[in-house]
Amino acid sequence: MKNIYFTLITFLITSLMFSQSGKTIFIGATEGMKKKGFKSEVKSNKNQYREIDIGNDVKWVLAQSNGIYEPKDYLIGVKFIAKGSLYPINEIGEDATKKYLEHTVEYLKNNGYIVIYEDSDQYWNYPRIFNYSNKYGIVLVNYEEKKAAHLIPFEWEKQKYVSAFIPYFELYSLDPFMKIWKEQNMGQKKSAF
Picture 1 (cartoon, rainbow, N blue to C red):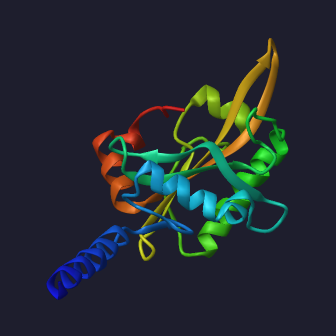
Picture 2: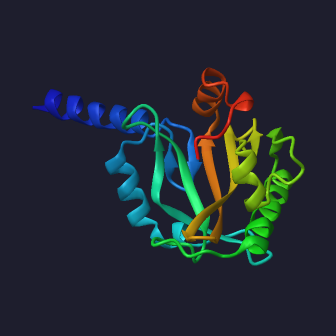
């Protein structure tokens, strides 16, 4: 009977060690989490995911479709949109979209991130131009924390000749992001957004 308890305890400890060995992406979201695990993480820490305040009235919130999985059930990143832009999406306007993107880039740079890619167009953060040049916005990495950040402005047509704007921000575990970045030659092609 002691052997059964010892085996069970050893199994549980080992399972916990390996299940928590992924790199932290954001709060308790770790690389490799399954969809159910990530959903549970968001639910248990919903207040922390509902408002990520980085100052200067820039507040992010998890996007409706908030996990990035590659392959199908392996979490590699988390998606954010501007607070107040929840589904159904409400626009925050061109100026606020630019402000969100610029301030977030400065915030990330001040926290150890460096730019590895920025669209050659000097107006990468301007929503109207971004969709026409349709490049990849800006990508920053933090090698120490092993994270990558990808930011773009997003414009869509609400009605004929009436556009709406929101900023979009993805935070990834660095290794899987760089693998996809290189495999898909993302720095050299148009964005999938």
